[in-house]
Length: 329
Image 1 (cartoon, rainbow, N blue to C red):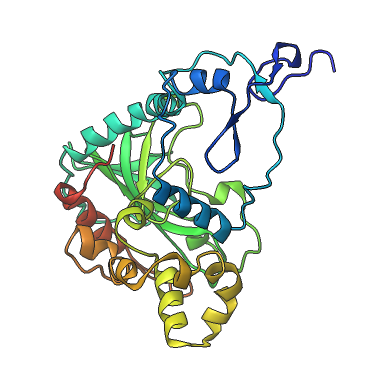
Image 2 (tube, one colour):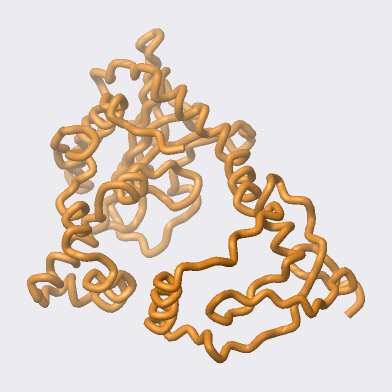
């Protein structure tokens, strides 16, 4: 079809078929030499391969039922792809990612080298955000923190609905607290969350790149310390519980409920051997990086209106140990 483009932005008219098929040692067709030279900087790997490794490769393919001895060979396609942002496809995506995260990395490095202000002696119980200015010791309501970087933590009350109830945040310049409007209204169960029930951390018109650090936060727009911890040192609480239950043959309700969706996605018995798993099980995030024991984050009862901003202890202790943090670049 005229004008139709493939994903690379190259028209079908720019594609040309080639008879120069590139076949590897096990008979699987590879990309054409023309494409290979563009994607991998023209580097040619040696065609020599150790016979022992070749047999291992074939065994591995058979294990996963990948056909190779009778695979179909298609006509090779040559095309001129857009210029890469680097010498090869690996550099291309690394450079793109680096350009995106560089502003946030610089912000994070500046934040970790700073000192936190003293914690407020009195916490205000007011709807919305309250700022506790470290320069003059005053506190006053603000629409949102609007900071370059801050550590953020919140608590919800599941029995009333899946929405935030209180939150705290801290930056090098100030502490912040946030209270939901439902703390000042008659308690009620909510089946849905309105936009105004969420916590604003930036002004809608703000164009600067802000960094919000949280634990077990959303998968986007946050630096999630739980994700960093899991990537290098441990399982989540749920994964740990499921693994130990599977190992002991437990049929607890929680295990049964999550068995199909969680255990099947991560087959502990086949994915990891016992030695590998021993490096992960039992590594809590605070034990691994901060050498502290966290208290229960929050005690909250809407009916008798008692609030305990104990989650600031968690927040402050985690950040105070910033010397233990390791930046992976």
